[in-house]
Structures are given as structure tokens and as C-alpha cells.
Amino acid sequence: MVDPEPARLPRLNGTSTEAIAMSAQPLTFASHIHHVHHAARGEAPWVRWSLIAIALLFLALFLLMPLALVFVQAFAKGWETYVSALADPMALAAIELTLLVTLIAVPLNTVFGVAAAWAIAKFEFPGKNLLTTLIDLPFSVSPVVSGLIYVLLFGMQGWLGPWLHEHDIKLIFAVPGIVLATLFVTVPFVARELIPLMQAQGNDEEEAALVLGASGWQTFRHVTLPNIRWGLLYGVILCNARAMGEFGAVSVVSGHIRGATNTIPLHVEILYNEYNSAAAFAVASLLAMLALVTLALKSVLEWRLARQIDAAKDEE
Amino acid sequence: MYKSPDKLPLDHGLPESNEHMRTYRQHGVLPGFPLALGFTLLYLSLIVLVPLSATFLKSATLGWSGFFEAVTTPRVLASYKLTFGAALAAAAINAVMGLLVAWVLVRYEFPGRKLADALVDLPFALPTAVAGIALATLYSSKGWIGQFAAQAGFKIAFTPLGVTIALTFIGLPFVVRTVQPILEDLERELEEAAASLGATRWQTFLKVILPTISPALMTGFALAFARGVGEYGSVIFIAGNIPLVSEITPLLIITKLEQYDYAGATALAVSMLLVSFTLLLAINLLQWWTRNRRGSRV
Image 1 (cartoon, rainbow over the protein chains, first blue to last red):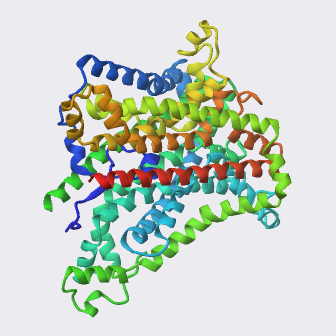
Image 2 (tube, rainbow over the protein chains, first blue to last red):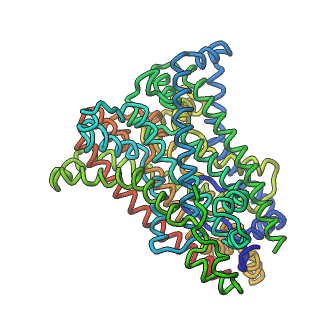
């Protein structure tokens, strides 16, 4: 049921969002599982332990310390300050807006990702490589520019601004602009996870289902979807993390109207700039927890995906 | 969403061999291609392509001289120097430290290895604004790390050094995650052969390992650099945004927008987009090179 050539899948284990999105280097899975069993050899023990110490020190200094600082600062003035910062009506409004934007952006980009992966992975057509590159394009655009392009299109000085104003439609400095900017920066996530996965799985199972009389929709639901579910979930989780945490693009289109167009990251910025550090870090700690949950889920899914690929190889 | 096909393959008779299946695939035996491709193109056009093109068209209304003037004022030039300089320095630091981290994660067993491996992705998962205020606090003159710098008589926050540190934070995973799979793929036999021929470990690294991983290392470097050039959230808090000193180009775009200088903001944005697309092209070429290298070895 697997392609005649050995299953070559992207290295999902420990591969991060944009790295995989922009590099997407395939790797034979076998080499990955076996690397651990290779005894470390070559370097003298003192060299080995020095290198480990330097690497860990660097990670602790550059990654662990900023993370720890968020939580230490959040609770620096005690639980009460922490809770009141989160219960503040403006904070609650920001949380509500972030959830709303995410609930729109993530499902839309998930549908897009599945459709794009279906077209690109299952069919041959001219311009396929160009389309794949175009899907990745938002990753290489600065977040600020990602927001600006919508201001130039829908803002008062933009192409459609005067027309929208006449018809009393407000997109920029309003919620629709925030949704658009979030959509732009998160477009590639789901598609980027699914394309290599579906390419590796091939069309054989779907073709078999069709031959046996299943409809196209049945084939997709009962054959394709179960096959891609972990990869799909992986993409959705990464998309969700970025959608909730996006700052630069949203900052440009939001207008920073408190209680109306402030998302959680924008609320953090305002609190910090008002020298209300404890409250800023309290709200920031919500996003830091989101990051930790994302990393944990990612690790679990990578393990799942690895087992799925493993099983596919055993069948072969 | 996916309609059932007008004709099931049964109508065409059962495919007899794999040969037939291939032909069917090319002719699209699976349903939903027009719908999936049509939706993909429409969605991508509406969200990405039309807004991006509109920005380029907008900048064309400035005229060449207007555009050139807007992107070469002293303040803009200073922001380029800072943005590209800091992104380059950060990518260089990450090339060295990222390679070291990837090496240690791939080659050695030690307690906490899996945790360290998961931690590498933190800069991707942590929203940039949170990273920004955390780094600004950490490196301020009273911060956990900044106080030592202050005692030594120099400042980190509100200087180009602070910008470089923020970009190092944000760029690290790009190098580690690009180099890691290549290191895992390395054929140990080559290293053993080198050793048995009398090469020292360091010679083996320089002459056998480094040349093999250099395309991936350069890709990681370019990815980290590209990300650094456009980065906003994690930088602006630690940078302090002093014009001509610590003001990055993305922030200058926002400043111009806030001053209703739409022409200036557009020109700057287009100049940044051109840089991004050039880098994207370079990265694609590097990846093609990496794949070819790997392909020829497998």
C-alpha cells in the first residue's frame, strides 16, 4: 500500500514551523531512528562534555532565561496582582478578540491547506512548483509589511478605501483587518505540513477506494483524512500558536483601540509601555503557556507521526 | 466539499496493472482537482497575491525619483545599516552556536537531551511580543543579565547590541533545524575512513564533515538572516528605537504610517519586499543545492 520507493518523509521530529516550511528537506526515516543508537565516538570525553556544556549554557542563557523571566515577573507582585491583571475588562476583551480571530483564521487556513495539499500532492499540473513557492511566500514577508499591504488596499489612503468609506464599511483599524492580517501570516502552516506527507503516501489507497465504488467525498473522509490526521493536527497547532501570538502584522492594522481592537499581544505591549510591568508579564504568561502547550503537543505528535511512518515501513 | 466524481473508474474498466494506474493518475482518476485547485488559487490570490501586487502598484505611483528619495534618507539608511548589520551578526552567531547545538543534540547522549531538543523551537512558539518584553527586561541595566554589563560599563538594551541579541534569539532554530537532519544522515563510515587514514578528529571535521554540511549550514544562515531582517516584535522593546541609533527598518515603516506618510511607508515596504524575495530565491537555490548533494550520496 506504500509507494514502491522507500517512504521519504519530511523530518517531522523536532522540526519547527518555519524551518520545515522553508526547507522541507526529506530524510529517510530509518537514519533518524538509528542515530541515537550510534555510540558517540570520535571525540575525547573532555571535548564531548565541554561541547555539551557550552551548548546547554547557550540554550539556558538565550532561551530558558527569557522564558523563566516571564513567569517570575508575572508573579513578582503576588497572586492578587496576577489575577487582577487577567480579570481586567480590557484584558478580557483582548482575550475574547484573540479567540475570535483565531476561530476564524485557523479553520479557514485549515480548509485552504487541505485543498492546496490535495491539488499539489495528488495531481500533476504545470506551475506546481511555483504554486508551492507562492504558498510559502508569507513566511518571507516581514510581519509589518504583511499588515501594511492591507492598509494600502483597504485604508483611507488605499485603493479601495474611499469606496469602502462611502459604503460605511470599516476593515482597517477594525476586527476584519485583524482577521485578514492573521490569515496572511498563517496561510502556509497547514499546507506546508500536509503537502510532503500526502506526496509520500501516494494515491494508491484513494484509487483503491474509488475502484471499490466509494464516492470522492467518502474516499476523502474514510481514506485520506485518517491517513493525514496527525500531520493535519500538527499543522493546525502551529497555525493556532502563530494566529494567537501574531504581533507585528496585527499591530499595523489594529489601530490599538482598547477594548475593541486589542489582541492579547497588543494588550501586552500597551501595559509594558505604560510601565505596568507586572500586569504586562501576567498577560504575557498566558501566551508563554500557550507556547509551552504548543511545544508539548508538537513533541507528542512527532512521536505519533514517527510511529505511523514506522508502521507504514513495517507493512512494506 | 469534494463532490463525487462524475464517473467512477469502474466505468472505464478496472486498471490491469501499475502501468495503468500511473496513466490514470496523470489523467486525474482522483476527483476534486478543479475544485481544490480553483479554491487554492482564489484564496491565495485574495489573501496574498492581490494585496502584495497592490503594494507594488502603489509604489509605482511614486515615480522612480520619489521612490529613490524615500528609501535613501539618512534615517532610512541608518535603519538599513542597523537592520542588515544586526541580522548578519545574529545569523553568524547562530551559524556557529546552532551548528554546535545541532551537533551536541545529534551526536551525544546526555541527561535532558530531549528537553533541550524541544526547547530549541521556543522562539517559534513564543509570541514575539512576549519574547520582546522578556529580552528587554533581561538585558536592561537592572535586569538579570544587563546588570553585569552595566557593572562592566556598557549597555545592551537600547543599543545595536540589544537588537543583535534579540535577532540571535529569534534565528537560532533555523540553523539548528536545518543542520540537524543532515548531521543525522552523515555516513559515519567516511569519518572512520578518515580516522583510519590518520586524520585527527579536528581534520576530519574540517575536511570531511564541514564540507558535507556546509550547504545546509548556509541555508540555515540565510533563513536566520531573512527572518532577522523582517523581525519586529522581539526587537522593538529591547531596541528602544532611537532614530539613527537603534531604529530598525520595520519600525520605521510603522513610524511613517503613524505620521500619515503613506508614500514613504510604501516605498520602504517595497524595498524590504524586494530584499525578502531576493533572499527567498537565494534560499531556494541553496536548498536545491543541498538536495542535490544529498541525492548524489544516497
